[in-house]
Length: 295
Image 1 (tube, rainbow, N blue to C red):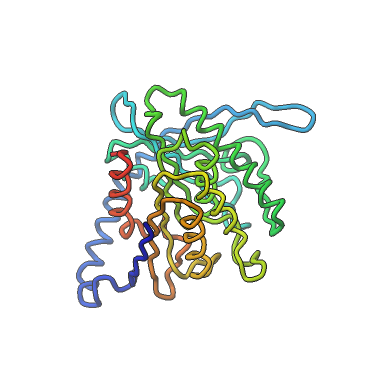
Image 2 (spheres, rainbow, N blue to C red):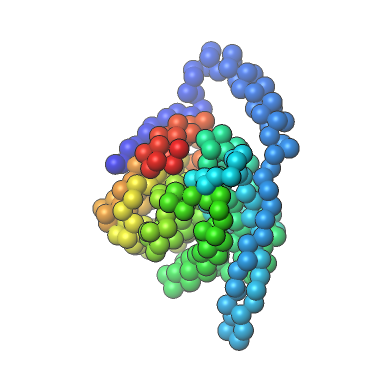
């Protein structure tokens, strides 16, 4: 299913209602932030064999885990972060979407956020190239997928993980990475939530076509379980046309997609739909998790 949702996010309630509701929302956000500030997940180390030209190295990846109370097994979401921008996010910054963690834990679902090689406090080198060359795009994705495979292998050995209900989610490069991994390992993945996914921006377009399109086509051919795509307009990396083409390419290749495309006014950043607009997509994610029997 493809569903285009058009929302003016900056004026959802109307001007008069906003004057009344905004102070309340701000107060609630402050309260929630304070109450959750002391629950930022559990840090763990994930072992990985970093294959080299001359020798292999045993390294550790940093990960943050949010786990419901009890022994499980729990449905588990593995969230993959995006790139550094480049130069926007420091390589050594740990990505920790704690609000998403609490959102899932409240539904008795675990969240795991691994940092790929060379990112955050993970060992190894950050070699996810910023290149428009198809060969280097493929190499960068393969390199990133190796870190995700290490995380998945680790989680499959944990008694608290429901191996039949492993869901991948990701933002930006993490979104398309999740789809690529699922397409290569369909038996391990129950579903994918793709937030603003893509490996390269429109700056890499060739003949007015995004180089992300073949990536979505390939994933759609190989993964036929339900997926959820969440995007917003005014994306700094992809035009609205690119976003729609990516979703259509995935669908036409055979993928099962619910495509949610939020229309923002100028000033709202569509690429930040995951981090800043959870109040728009939380209900859709609720429905998706129920559809794939993750709740």
